Each structure stands twice: as structure tokens, then as C-alpha cells.
Length: 194
Image (cartoon, rainbow, N blue to C red; front, side):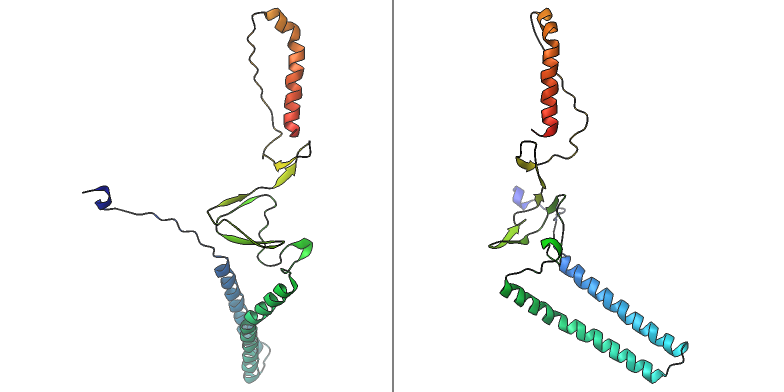
């Protein structure tokens, strides 16, 4: 029996899925259910407390439910028209400060993209996360003006160990202040990011 013929007791498979659209539809369903419950509650309150006519209340419920159904049915048409105008005008639905209005996930402090995700570029569309998880790291300018990734937690206590091996200890003692100054300046430059 070869290794390929050996029976397998268990298999573990990790599956990653983008569930944003499902969560959005679930939130819409919850909102509609709350609206329906509120409508029924208002109707029964109108009959029991305010003494309204049952026929008027039922007609009102029918009108409200019709309005909810119409809004739900027209939503794809509205989204399609918005997409059409967006593509015709070359815009992507910008909100305040040039941020896309729907589905915004801010990454100003960094983050991870775990699934393939499209993003807008000036000349088209980009794709990230297509080969696995990708990190988004915020950039910062150093003291010398260079643009790069800033390390988190910088600026704490710095410990520097300098080992000196010399055949002339008295010469080292004479240059102790000079060497201490060199090390202190190097540490200060490192803390500034230079």
C-alpha cells in the first residue's frame, strides 16, 4: 500500500467567503420586518386605544405594505440607474472628501484584505487580495522626507549595548565621553527616523 492509498481519517479545509452582500440583504430584511411590525402595532393601537374603524386600519395596513413592497421592488432599478449614470459620467458615487459612499472600509490605520477585492484607479479598476491575504500599511514621511512605513510602538525606551575590546584601557577612558556622544547622537537619529 502506497502513501496515496492510505485512508484519511479527517480532512480540514478552511473556506473564506465575502459575506458583505449577504449581510446587507439580511440588514434590509430586518429593516423591512421592523417596519412591518411597527405598522401592525400602530394599526392595533389605533383600533384598541383610539377607537378607529377596523376597515380604515386594514386599508392603511394594505397601503403601507404596498409602499414597502414597491420600494423593495424598485431598489434594483434605482441601483441600476445609479450605476448607469455613474459609468456614463465616470464617477463612483463620492461622498465627503472623495470617499466612496457605499461599502466604505477605512484603512487609514492599516488593515488586511483577505479576499479578492476591486478598487478604483484613475485609469480603471485594480484588484487586490487575488493571491491571498494582503496587508495595507499607512505611509509616513521621515525626518529626511523619505516616504515609508512607520513602525508601531516607536519612541519607547531604547537600550544600546556597546562592547569595547582594547589593549589600552587608559586610551578608552580618555575617549569615553566622545564615544558616549557618538552613541547618543546615533540613537537620537534612529528615534527621529533619519
